[in-house]
Length: 348
Image (tube, rainbow, N blue to C red; front, side):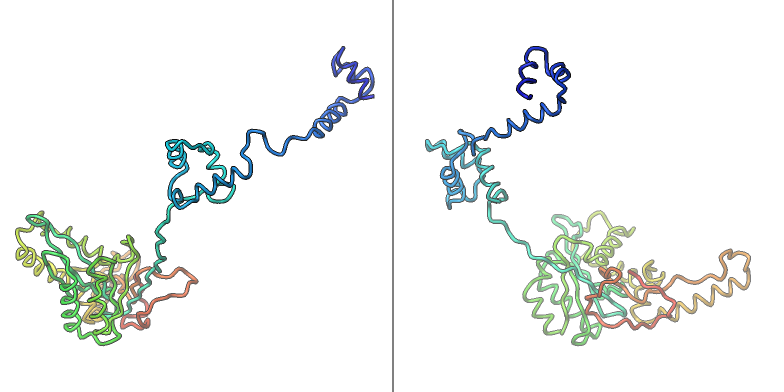
């Protein structure tokens, strides 16, 4: 029947032939497709590379001579030497078939750095430090600052003409002695600058019983409090466009850091000065502020639409990279005891 339909279709067309002989056109088309499927195609086109030729191309690309070069470079080099293996696209195809289409050079494997998680619940538990540039007559000067994480008190600073691990050692050693740091008490956090990672500084830490902590490379957020303190330094109204000399910069630093530690009311400290928190005066000042506000409320309650006013809360804990909810903290910086009221919220 199919042959009759095919013969008639040549004369009157498929539609009329199928209608005349009562054969569905879909059956005719299905029969045609089945016949085409029986025609076997060759295993590979005649112009395709043979397996031995593919093996030679792959061996050449992965040879010691060419293993660090892109296929285009290999192609051009071989042509200049009078040899032709295949096209550039075929080289890429062969590499792809063997899961070798990636960066062909040996790559530097960067180590995985753990995110530092530091917790301070009292002064002299965690210090952070860093070095910044001050503008000077030529290349400028270097300002070294040691900052207490909990109180934001600057426990030590110096201005020098260069970065030096020896100067950093002296600053840390003198500051630790001045603060009465004992073995195992302090953790010192910094970025990965040259003076911070010097071997001599590591030896000093061992002598003082100080535990070092390093930020991840190129991650300023891992040392945020030192970075913020430097912003306060450079945005202070008295900060000049340029210091005349290193002595000029040191004289300015004497005045600035006295103001910062003893007069600057820090928003992260409940508007207390760093010195008040560092030397344990904040709790008494908090209660006195509370008493003054209650007197003001008693005298004029109608002025306080939200009820009894409270002074800004004091911190009871300060974190660098606090753990996420449900994650166990990796901090090694002591307990969570505090001298402040239970109602005080944490500073993160």
